[in-house]
Amino acid sequence: MTNKRWILRDDTIRKLCLSWVGSIELDEDRLLEVTVKPYKKNRSLEQNDMFHAWCGTIADTTGHSKQEIKQIMVESTFGTEEFLNLQGRTRTRLKETSGMTVGEMSELLERTIQIGIELGAEVPEVTHG
Image 1 (tube, rainbow, N blue to C red):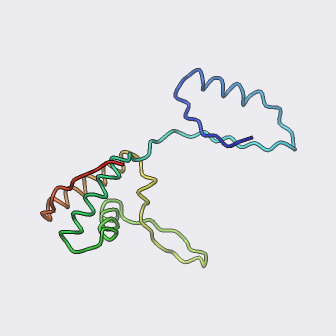
Image 2: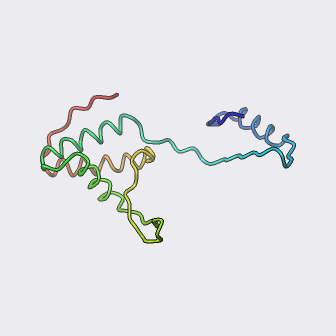
Image 3: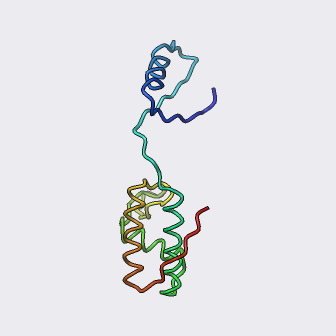
């Protein structure tokens, strides 16, 4: 069996999948894993391009690196989250932009643009792709 990812937007497809799962004969030799969770659309490439363009123009204005600005913007918008390392010590990390939803990325973009304007950064030229 190959791993496939399906987004079930159509009610007919949903019913077909539920019918298929219900018809499976379960036995000890056959391993199955079924995960159902609400679909969350990740940030768009356009949002990502805009965010990186603003990070670049803010970096040019402040003298920071683009990566430093990216980290500053993510932390100022979402803070940090704690996790335990392999030695059981508490560490902190930033939220990964690659896993952000469209809404989260919109919030990050709004904050970044606001800070960029306050700092007098030039409006960046954004190229998509």
